[in-house]
Image 1 (cartoon, protein in one colour):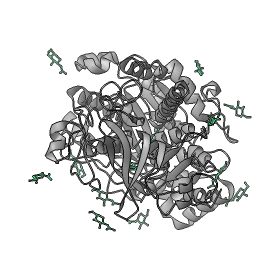
Image 2 (tube, protein in one colour):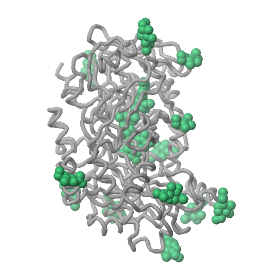
Image 3 (cartoon, protein in one colour):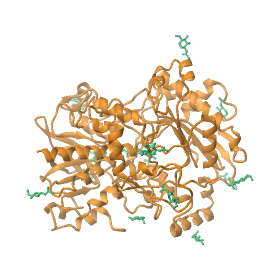
Image 4 (tube, helix red, strand yellow):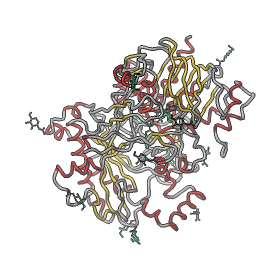
Length: 581
Ligand SMILES: Cc1cc2nc3c(=O)[nH]c(=O)nc-3n(C[C@H](O)[C@H](O)[C@H](O)COP(=O)(O)OP(=O)(O)OC[C@H]3O[C@@H](n4cnc5c(N)ncnc54)[C@H](O)[C@@H]3O)c2cc1C
Ligand SMILES: *[C@@H]1O[C@H](CO)[C@@H](O)[C@H](O)[C@H]1NC(C)=O
Ligand SMILES: *[C@@H]1O[C@H](CO)[C@@H](O)[C@H](O)[C@H]1NC(C)=O
Ligand SMILES: *[C@@H]1O[C@H](CO)[C@@H](O)[C@H](O)[C@H]1NC(C)=O
Ligand SMILES: *[C@@H]1O[C@H](CO)[C@@H](O)[C@H](O)[C@H]1NC(C)=O
Ligand SMILES: *[C@@H]1O[C@H](CO)[C@@H](O)[C@H](O)[C@H]1NC(C)=O
Ligand SMILES: *[C@@H]1O[C@H](CO)[C@@H](O)[C@H](O)[C@H]1NC(C)=O
Ligand SMILES: *[C@@H]1O[C@H](CO)[C@@H](O)[C@H](O)[C@H]1NC(C)=O
Ligand SMILES: *[C@@H]1O[C@H](CO)[C@@H](O)[C@H](O)[C@H]1NC(C)=O
Ligand SMILES: *[C@@H]1O[C@H](CO)[C@@H](O)[C@H](O)[C@H]1NC(C)=O
Ligand SMILES: *[C@@H]1O[C@H](CO)[C@@H](O)[C@H](O)[C@H]1NC(C)=O
Ligand SMILES: *[C@@H]1O[C@H](CO)[C@@H](O)[C@H](O)[C@H]1NC(C)=O
Ligand SMILES: *[C@@H]1O[C@H](CO)[C@@H](O)[C@H](O)[C@H]1NC(C)=O
């Protein structure tokens, strides 16, 4: 399959299955009736399309607004991941200007490719704390979401690939199953990772844990990453799930197909309008059921464009209200973090070294020939920690005090590149501390009735007093950790915020000015508020949502693992319903 794009490989199916397969990828003739039209070929869309189309009698049409990046080196090479964020493979979204950030408007790119966010993310694979899923089970009344049950879906979506270098005792083999997505975990030999791990352990008093095995607090010597052991390429929803459908006549995957509206027959979702490529001609795909998996920003946008959302807001855009659903677009959570920057000893492996062309050629050849070196990995050590009770009590922070005890509040991580502009002319390590249990939620709203116009994303970072005091504590804690003797001979000096920044007010200013999205948006069309226990939109028929927008609250760690598992759970639910009929 290597070297052949997915769309053209599907086109080869002409004559072997449904007549319309022959039309791919030039365009879809319309008026075909599918069992399931799935809108958004990201993590959730790929998993559900693959799972449902395992039954040859079930026809599935998966539309994806972004392109097919199968052969893109920027997607496949772990060390090039950041370059995808400013490419055709990303929706170049940003937050609206935030008063809580002194007017800053953090970038909020989303995946725009077959595979969605998993095509451009940093590949960390880390499950949430058990109590998160137990809470979702309670909110939704779906017992399948309880950690002990969802654990089977987590395992069913991934397998662990042992590596040939380094010890593997930081992983717990029983947390992984035999699913299609590959996960590996290499100890990073960049001269920094071990120091960071040791400093986090001693300063935060944390034990090493495999955070995929039912822990929401702990230290991690090396993140688990969705990278294949064999050739050190990114594994992601397209590779793990999309390609499994290439031989199936009952599954159609169409990239560059941007859905503009869901059409209803009375209160029943009946079809989806979409445009392909630059052509403005609207095509229509009909489905017995429509499943929306466009991600936590674009799913609420599509629902609102289709008449499902806060009635007054829709009327402001002359959109006919099909269902007044005030909760659509609200409850938008994201992990977010302020950054500190350090100049490090020149023998630490950072992106700065790549400014030397000879070095860049060397590591490029090393990756190509041996699948090793800095381009073969992007993982780091990191930790999840709770803010001590006495600190929360002193801050009157009853919110974080009341989160279940297995949940970290803060995620400490680093990256080997500058994350604040302008970048100094030196070897820089960025470290950050993310608020992973924020109290304040933001919202997604339309900015136009034209589907081409980006929505307004009010991120509302640190939008409560508790969130502010929690992150201030975290930022100061991280700064003090970086002073630890574990970094002797490694860290040369603090670059940001800098030695002149000492008062709480100035630290708060630096924190706000450096704050960024972790790109873990979720919750905007959530279970309980908008969806029933079957993930169906309450108040209409034939319409389900199954992506990260369904999460009622924020998990404790990076989010993709949870999306794979929840999508797998939804697919199982749908198949069981079909068998009953
Ligand atoms: C830059 C970045 C870095 C990240 N880093 C990590 C990480 O290291 N670890 C981790 O666990 N998580 C990470 N994440 C988060 C993770 O990738 C997401 O949680 C996950 O991809 C969400 O899955 P989803 O199915 O909800 O949506 P997505 O994967 O975003 O898929 C939605 C898909 O729908 C398509 N779409 C949207 N609107 C339409 C429309 N109208 N018509 C047709 N198609 C449409 C989109 O193009 C996209 O492909 C990162 C995300 C980003 C963006
Ligand atoms: C598909 O449908 C045919 C005809 O109704 C039936 O005989 C067959 O068992 C079905 N196959 C599956 C996998 O459901
Ligand atoms: C993305 O959006 C930002 C902010 O609006 C803008 O500065 C930048 O040029 C855009 N990037 C691309 C690649 O379009
Ligand atoms: C990985 O392989 C090494 C060497 O064969 C072995 O010692 C280790 O137990 C394996 N780890 C896992 C998690 O399978
Ligand atoms: C390993 O993972 C299992 C769940 O798969 C868990 O029950 C067990 O406690 C974990 N062991 C350790 C040492 O963390
Ligand atoms: C980098 O250099 C420092 C100071 O010379 C030394 O202590 C350290 O061991 C070196 N680290 C690596 C990874 O080579
Ligand atoms: C990497 O290896 C996998 C099989 O393990 C293969 O499917 C994939 O195409 C390879 N990727 C590249 C870019 O070579
Ligand atoms: C499609 O419509 C958009 C918005 O109306 C317009 O900007 C664009 O030029 C059109 N493209 C084509 C190919 O007609
Ligand atoms: C809505 O329709 C009214 C009446 O036709 C028009 O005046 C108004 O400009 C429209 N508003 C928008 C946002 O299109
Ligand atoms: C690949 O690995 C071999 C064996 O370790 C080594 O001799 C060779 O230099 C490496 N190639 C590159 C380009 O680094
Ligand atoms: C906490 O609440 C008490 C009693 O209302 C008040 O005196 C104190 O200033 C508050 N502390 C903080 C940090 O807000
Ligand atoms: C960066 O510093 C190096 C010396 O460390 C110098 O050769 C180079 O010219 C500098 N680059 C810029 C853009 O200042
Ligand atoms: C600290 O110094 C930097 C660089 O000179 C400057 O940009 C920043 O505004 C100063 N901050 C404070 C709080 O004085």
